[in-house]
Amino acid sequence: MHVHHSGTKWLVAVAIGATLSGCATNPDGTTNDQQATVAQGAVFGALVGGLLGAAVSDNRGRGALIGAAAGGLIGAGIGSSIAERKAQYANEEDFLVAEIHRNQEFIQEADAQNRQLYQEIAQLDRESQRLARQYRAGKASRDALVRQKATVEKQLAKAKQINSLAEKQLADAEQVHQESQQKRGPQDQYTRQLESNLVELKETRQRSSQNVASLQRVYDSMSI
Image (cartoon, rainbow, N blue to C red; front, side):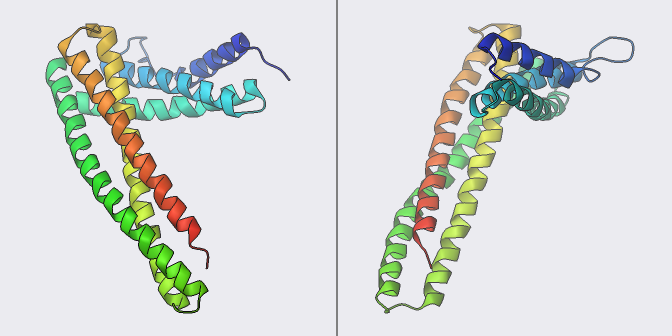
């Protein structure tokens, strides 16, 4: 079944409505700040999930529905996390300052971990290639190769964890930036600092993704 792009958008909108129904308002019809944040997160996640689902599915309409539903739940999860942090501060400015510092601290730590991994990858690659050559030539034991592969696998797991955390941090930062831009405008000092955070977080995520890909290549090359 062929679904036009406009039809895909409509399906995404339906999925968003289904995801949000019953979760964004109080029984009396009012909405508090935390509920609004959760709802905004769900909308953001559903839109992204819907477009991705449509892009990767053979059936674009069905893919959009599945992607939007899953994305809405993920987005709501992001919103809940943000709402919980927001509740700890007396005013929005203090919350935004804390979020900016949170992003900066994460970037600093993740980049340090990424740099260390990057240096270790080159050494692991050289050692793995040497052991693989020796094993094929009968000059290294299978146990030595197994131990080396386990070491690479451990570093790969670490790289994947950093990448996963970078994805989560970036998703949170995008949601906070979106809210700030809507409420305070694009020229607001906090909005602009959050936008700067986003640029750096995307670079951090890219470096962590590259480390994952490099370690996966080394791991896959070590056939036993």
